[in-house]
Amino acid sequence: MTRRLPERALQALYATGWDIFVGPEEIPNRSRLLWGVGGAVGLLTLLTERIDGEVMDRCPELRCISNCAAGLDNVDLDEAARRGITVCNTPGVLTETCADFTWALILGVTRRLLEGDRMMRAGEYPGWGPLMLLGLDLHGATLGVLGMGQIGRAVARRASAFGMRVLPWVRGASLEEVLAGSDVVTVHLPLTAETRHLLNAERLARMKPGAYLVNTSRGPVLDEEALAACLASGQLAGAALDVFEREPLVHPDLVASDRVLLTPHIASATQATRERMAMLAVQNLIENL
Ligand code: GLV
Image (cartoon, rainbow, N blue to C red; front, side):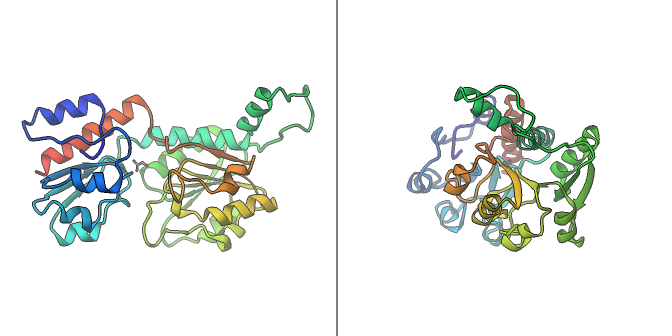
């Protein structure tokens, strides 16, 4: 186990009677990771660890990599397949939790909650103003959903409760039409060679002027530098990001922008869901060893 998981999951793993090596609570550095995995037949990994050929070389008997995340971009799937190693993830159990959080970001950024909060805390609230912190009405607006997997569909389902029209983007449809027709675009795509920097400067320029962008998928789907430029020019009104290109780093121009709501990759972070993910990851490992 590359990093310590919730107690119930640890207990379930200990109950197998296997020799268990538990990594640290914090993100292990590369040398600690390479040392810790040595000789393992199964790995329980987190998205913070890059599990590539070098890691697999350390465990010649490795049979299963159980990644405690829906995303699998941190695992070299080709390398695992070449070696006959089964790779598992934890989809499903976090769907509704991530969809709820996406809506927290959509509401937060379009109604400028953090700008208001910062103003209040700084003692800068001058009293009610007719032009102060004006945002976007969600009712009657259009939500572009990039990726209609489980999470994308759960986000889209909630849109009708807010009176929004949904423009889904699925493979084969026109991305440009979705970008140009949406007041808010929310990203729910896996990170693959095809989706890396899908939202580059050219595509961001196709978005409706004054629109908002929300990303709870993977940071590299979006070119942060290009996004910062669109926000600085006023082409986009705001963005809410839970994931970043080089986590835990954030592009300094995004940090400097008032129009960006930043959260530390917490879309699935509820007590119950993190426990469900850990238990599923343990179960996947048990079933595949
Ligand atoms: C979180 O980002 C996950 O993939 O589960």
